[in-house]
Image 1 (cartoon, one colour):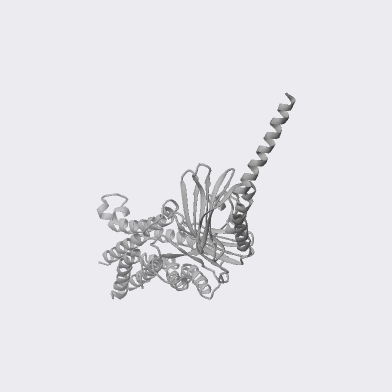
Image 2: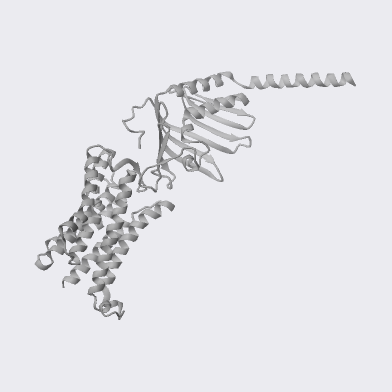
Length: 214
Length: 241
């Protein structure tokens, strides 16, 4: 009986080792390195701007379109284009202060970025909303990575699929600019949880003086 | 210059108001010259208000829009003073020097702010942003304190003017003078004046309140202001007969 228990234990350990090795083989390290290099490249950028389409699931699918601008050290300006209820809304974060002009409000007020009104329905504050933060989160999730594979690859871009124990992400990278084109996150049933589409990505933009001040 | 569709619609009330202002400005009855001129002054400042609404629908670069908005604000932001001045003239209130100062000093203060804004001090306009009027419409975001100051000035002066106007008409209407509500038809002046101001205030309130719940596709005040100007012009012409 004693031997049987030992046999079962050794068999279990070997099984786990085999599963781990197999899982490691499912992870293409080239993908991990590429995404890490894109993250480092984005974090090094002094300034950028893009048109962001943000999709996220609350009770229903919410789609926000906005012009997003960033400059170092941490200046952010977001101008909403849609939905119509938010069209014209501006939020600016600079010098650790957030100011906003809601679409229905003709003037600017200061808001706490960590408050519900400051987050504006999102789960994170404005100072954690940069594409750099999104990539940091994606790279952090590599610790729980089960598989990473190439879905599509051309000379201009590459689309990767990353799966961990709680979700699946599709990441499209612009190979020339070395910036993300989109990051989509699904639950393991395949339902969209959130997605960010980064169009017209411009890097090292010279913003006019006072652009990040309201 | 190209406008969003709302801009073309707003040109109609602008032209109606401007024409009425011109007609009353050039009316030559000496007895009513002061009233007519003060009315014309008020209507011309209201035309600046329309210019501001129209500018918000124009397709133009942000810097040019800022210039247009500053010019239109220089008329729009003195509307409370010109309204009160018109009411003083209409009600034959004695316009003393101190009263004149009281009427126009806030207007001069706001004009100074707009002038400083022209000089690049950001005293009135904070930013330019997209609005609900089509894809190209832009509007301005104001500095909070000057804007709230202007709203208070607007409410106080318009209420003051309305009270004076309505009290005057009530005083001069026979039915009320005798303390009897004989027939509403006999109090048309009273109804016209109060109705005009109520419509004006309701329009502006709607422009502020509605966007909190639902995006506006057309400024309500764009319609109500011209209705007020028409009613007031009619009242003026009726009284002068």
